[in-house]
Every structure is written in structure tokens, then in C-alpha cells.
Length: 273
Image (cartoon, rainbow, N blue to C red):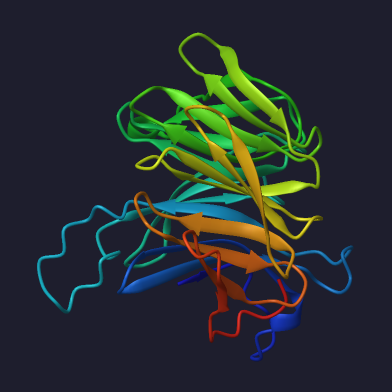
């Protein structure tokens, strides 16, 4: 599945796309979220899909059934400022919910214990919180600050992890007490966040420094890991030694080994990121 604007021409314009998010949850499927970057930004009709979420716990009953065929797919669109719920078997929208004009909604996180969906609003000073069981209902908000670009929820401890690329900070926020537990100034335009809860580490992509910051989420000690490209989006799994990192400059996705810190570019043509 590729999520983004379908071009009018038959040829897909790879040089006008950013890979803004991706998921590598199982061997059957790869989901990619593309931001379409037209040559003329004033041209109408362009759809900016900045993030998605799907439930990868679906039980597959046959070997021929696609794992996503009975899952719901949640998509946030920044230009239209909307949240959509789609069926992955048909990619048809069952719910389209406005998220507030000129707020630039950007990232999604899910709290499966409380059945809540969190959406960042880059140009607003809050995160909106939506009831998955009643997605059309009015959202509540968590008052924070503008510039939040990525979030991850620790459902067990009711903790919100986020990064802000205006303040250049990594923040740990206790939802129950409405208080910041920890914050660290990272610098260098942090753009993406990955959490490995099994090993108590957070990884942050620093876009203008060609590096990742590795943060121990128990002691909050941190180290910097330098790479040969500008990281833009990262994806990982609990208790996995592998991160997947999108390259902002030259395009493509890299496989990063957390132990050896080696990077290997994947043989897929994702176009210009």
C-alpha cells in the first residue's frame, strides 16, 4: 500500500515525493506514507498524507489472506486537516473527521489500553485525543506547545514521548499528572522518534546533523550515533536490533543495526525523500 496523492499522469512522479512514514510490521506487507511535493506549491488539489496507523495484531486465518484485510487504517492529512478511518481491504473511508483549520496535523499514536488515538498539530499548541470507539465524537486536547513532530505512547505507564523541532527538544510527559517528567535539548532539527521499550531506549533522528540520539528512558543518559546521510523518519520494533531510517537528501531507506551501528541501504526505489 502506498498512501498519498494519485497523480493525474500515468507515470508516478518519484522525484516529487517525500517518504514521511513507513511500517515494516510483518513480512507480508509494507506501508508507506508519501508527502507529495509538487513543483508548483500554489497548484491546487495536492493531498499531503503525513502519517498512518494500522492494527498489526490481526489474526491471519489462511496463508493467502493479506494480514491487513481485516484491519482498520487511520490516516491523517495535513493539507485538508483531517483524520480518516479506512478499510484496508477496500481503502474506502468510513469516517472523515476535520481536525481544525491551519493546525497542520502531522503524526498519530495509539493507546490500545484506553482505546485512544493521539494526533499532533504542528501549528497549534496542543495534541488532540480521539476516542477510537466513537471517532466522530469531539476530541479532547492536551495543552503543550507548537512544533511537535512525532509522538509515541507508553500505554502501560500512561506516558507520552515526543520531539519538538522548534525547541529542538525530546520530552517525556506524564498524561495522568499533566506534567513533564523530563526534557532534553537535542538541537539539530529532530524529525522522528522510535522507542524500544523492551530495552529502555529512545532513538531520535537529527536531520541537520547526520546523526541519531540514543536516550536511555530510565536514566536519561544519551549518546550520539553519526551516519552518512540526513535521517528524516525512523521505524523500529521492541526488542529488535534493527532500525529503518529514511534519507532526506538522496532518497531511499537504510537498515541500521543498533549493535554494530552499521547501515545498509535497502534495494528499493523510494524516490527523492
